[in-house]
Image 1 (cartoon, rainbow, N blue to C red):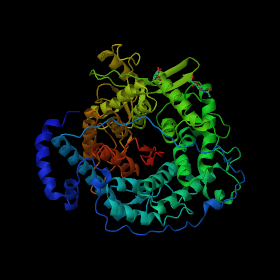
Image 2: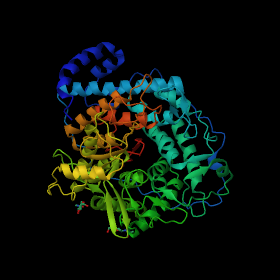
Image 3: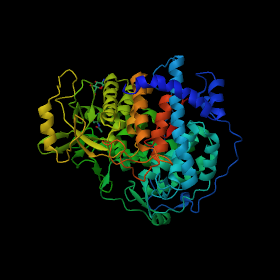
Image 4: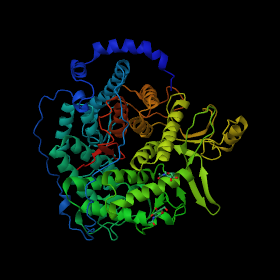
Length: 592
Ligand SMILES: *[C@@H]1O[C@H](CO)[C@@H](O)[C@H](O)[C@H]1NC(C)=O
Ligand SMILES: *[C@@H]1O[C@H](CO)[C@@H](O)[C@H](O)[C@H]1NC(C)=O
């Protein structure tokens, strides 16, 4: 954590002077004219020359005209608005002058990295789903509706890049959701990136074009519920769906797929006043609620479920990592959005507390490490005849869980959750700083200590560690101590670790998280920087690793947004005003 600290004092002073000469004038002007602590958005906003009048163009197919063979039920009704929520964010005091200057320098550095990638996207891949950051080519892997652009809308707004924002809105106005580059449209990705991106950009800007397009995508996804049992499909057969004759639900899907619609559909119902989205997804979550205590690990659901057979009971693999992650993530978050004011909304709190208690007992472990840091890692649990067995394997995708426990700790007033969340977030920061690049791998193994209780000693044991390494076929020489594999050694610009660090910073106000964030940011930029933008890397265990011609839309939608928000004013996207979807899109918490 303190690795770069001393150098920074000298370097920082130099950079401040350097930046002063290098920066466009407007940024410095804004910084110095606006007093600290006033409306954070205004503080960072670049001048908007004019707010253009933009009208949405109708897509070539109107998804709200589909005649459903199997119309979903229209109840339950949205719960009444939440009148009171527990405070989530730390009560921050202003930084000292020198600390504020340092954070400002960091914020501008994140802004610079974002702008570079955005300019390249504009030049080389405008209206395409993703820029290829090495070749300057592009890919359309999400139906060709400009995924990177839609995903980055709210980041543009948050970073105060208003002219770019309105240029992007103008582009959104012409997206045709009646045509797709792929015959099968992925429900999950379309929901979290496109619908989530449009809702958040609308919540921030109140621009009607964004609402119009959000409803178009919402109605497209709603057609995914036109099935015999009203459970959603995993992939929408695009042309068949238009006919309305019904879709066939897949036999077997990963649980995150049906479990990650609640937030977007609930918010869409709140914004439009049209109850149908909320009702459709509420039925899906009723199924999860009803089956939660009947599984092989009561409190959690297996990683694979069957929506066709309505079976979230019989599987035996349990994880909060990839394939299951946002099913769990959306339970406390749905509670934040909807409250527990009636029977249909109360289930989110019940399911959230229930899974959180179960995961503490069955999934989290203390790894054996050569230092005495108090950290937790989230593993996987298989339940076979002999009972539950924890595999100390983890992955970058699991790193959202620390932030989620911290949030749950505040929402449910439970200090244990907050403590567990803090240790989980520290676990991911630890994994980052352990590797020579300063970045953690996609997937890895560690050695489990006995029990999660920090009072039970867990001493570093060289022999035990060597024996555990020998057991792993994927062990290789040169791994950092404490890691028995880096099974998948890539870093693909993922956000989950900085997501948790951001949430822990906003909830606890502990300086260690801002410092961890800055170390992570510098490491990532150093290793992933290309002439055009940033690229995934092949091996976090090798400094200067080979890069891949790949930059997912979540780099600008999530990773850079979280970094930016760590160094920006703490009332910018306050966790008391917004809840973020799994693609880091902030949805406004309605208040009365
Ligand atoms: C499952 O168990 C939890 C914890 O005991 C409880 O709060 C919850 O109501 C149960 N769920 C159902 C559907 O019975
Ligand atoms: C908080 O969560 C812990 C861990 O699951 C549980 O044991 C405890 O009873 C909870 N406390 C409150 C006040 O709900």
